[in-house]
Amino acid sequence: MLVSDDIRPPGYREVFRERDFRVLWAAHALLNLGEVMKALALSALVYSRSGSPLLSGIAYVAGLLPQVVGSAALLSLADRLPPRLTMAGWDVARAVGAGVLALDVLPVPGVLALSMLYGLFDPVPAAMKSALLPELVGERRFVPAQSLMNVTVGAAQISGFAVGGALLALLGPVGTLWVVCGGALLSAAVLRLGLRLRPPRGADEAAITPARALSRTWSVNRALWADVRVRRLLLALCLPACWIVGAEALMISYADEIGRPRSVGALLTAAAVGMLVGDVLVGRFATRRQRNRWALPLSVLLGAPYLFFAARPDIAVAAGLAALASVGFGYSLCLQEPFVSAVPVGSRGQAFGLAASGLMSCQGVAAGLTGVVAELVRPSVGIAVAAAVCLVCTALLVRVLRPRP
Image (cartoon, rainbow, N blue to C red; front, side):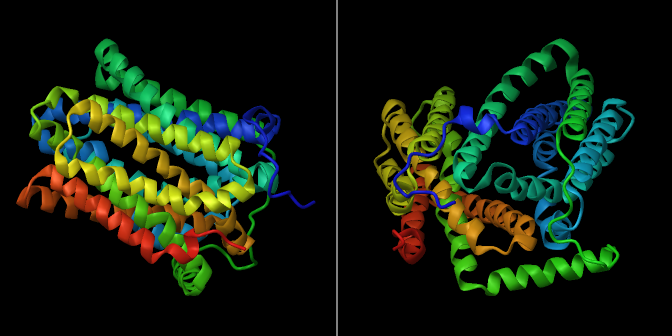
C-alpha cells in the first residue's frame, strides 16, 4: 500500500500499538539509561582509585573509542545473526561486565581495557536494532518510530545523569554498577521474552568465522560506499551534524570566555531541548512531502545561528541560538526513508552501523579541529568556524538535501 505524501504521519500512540516495537523501545530506553549511569560510575570509580582527572575522563568515554574499529571489522554480523538471541545475549554480556566492574577487583588499566573491549562489540547489536525498526513498524510508521527512539535517547541521557548522580551519592560507584548490572539483565529479559523470533536478514550457508565476518564487513562497506546514492546519503547524515557537535564541544570554554562558567548547563540544556523539538516536529507532525522539502532548510538552520557566536552573545542569547540551531538536527530524520530505500535489505544492519560509526568518527575529528581553532584564537571563533564549515558541507551536499521530485 502506498503512503500519500500529504498525510500526516501516525502518532506515537499508534506506533506503540505494535508489540515488538514496545519491546524494542523498552530495551532501548534501559540500554541508554544504563550506559549513562555506567559512564558516570566508571568515571567516579577510576577517579577515586587514581585521583587522576585524565584517567577519569578516559574512563567516561572508554567504551566509545573502540566502536569505530568494531564497525570496520564486525558490522556484517548485524545482518547474519538472529536479532532476538544476539541482542538479549549481548545484554547478558553487558550485565556480566558491569558485575565484574562492580566487584572492584580490577586495577585501573583493567577497568579501562574491559570497557574498551565491550565498546568493540557494541556496534553490532546497535546496528541490528536500527535495521530491525523499519521491519517492525512498516514504512508508514517508520519515521515517527525513529523519532520516538531519538527522543528516548535524549530523555534517557538527561534522566540518566539525574538518577546516576543520585545513586552515586547514595550507593557510591560500586553500588551504582550493581544497579546497571540489574538493568542490563532486565533489558535481556524484556528482549528474550517479548520480541518475536526473526531469522537473520542476510544469512547464508557459510559458517560465521572471524575471518569471514571481517571479509564480509569490508566487502559490503565497499559496495555501500561505491553506490553513489548511498554514499551521498551517508555523507549528508554525517557531515553537517558533526561540525555542530564540534561546536557544542566548545560550550564549556565559551561560557568561560564570556565570564559565565557556571551557566554552561543552560547552553547544553537549550541545545538538548532544541534537538528534541526538531525530532518531534519532523517525526510526529511532518508529512512525507514536508520531510522531503525540509531536509535542506533544516540543515541550513543547524549551522546558521552558531555564526552569531562570533559576536560573543551573553548566555541568554547564546542559549536561544543553540536551541534554535539544534532544531535543525531534525534534518537527519528527513533522510531516513531515502536511506532505508537505497540500501539492500540484506545489508541494512551494516548500513545503519556504517552511518553511526561514520558520524561518531566525524564528530571526533570535528571536535578536535574546532578545539584547535579555539586554542589558536578563542572558543567563540571556533564555534563560528564550525558553523561555517557545516554550511559549506550543506552547500556541497545540496543535491541530496534538496527536495526530490
